[in-house]
Image 1 (tube, protein in one colour):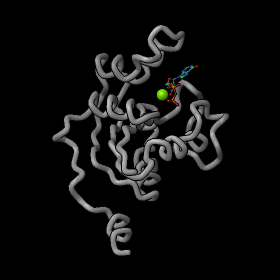
Image 2 (tube, helix red, strand yellow; image 1 turned 30 degrees about the horizontal axis):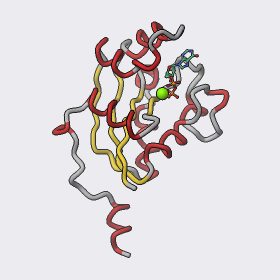
Image 3 (spheres, helix red, strand yellow; image 1 turned 90 degrees about the horizontal axis):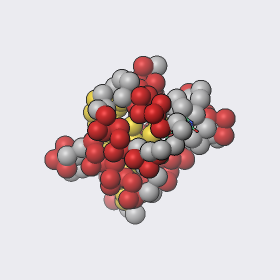
Length: 152
Ligand code: IDP
Ligand code: MG
């Protein structure tokens, strides 16, 4: 079933010039990009985004980290994109991430793990609304993969 998810390349990913390489992985897999922008998250973005972690010991550092520079915010659309993009990202702790995943390849610590992806349809909807207005999303186009699939 086609779903939408919110992905963000975090400030460490942007500062390490990994934007192109990370976006390529999602494009190669065939997901459709329907929202894309660079922004420095405000405190309001950060607190809304990570409200579930409020009160945890790492929360203040997490807020400082996510507001420390630009992120690349993206909305992707595709079948099972929520779970599959989490798989492509790899586990939160880079040492537990499977070989070939984004976090295995690039992340060095669980605090600075390069990328965020929604973990459920509910969080996807909530997170997309934090960073994008509906009119900023552009899903009215056809990817090559979609045209190939509709041929058969
Ligand atoms: P996720 O990003 O894989 O969904 P979450 O558990 O939702 O992982 O944590 C959100 C973010 O908070 C992580 O990506 C990481 O940046 C940070 N974080 C999570 N656990 C820890 C921790 O134990 N210490 C420091 N930072 C953490
Ligand atoms: Mg999470």
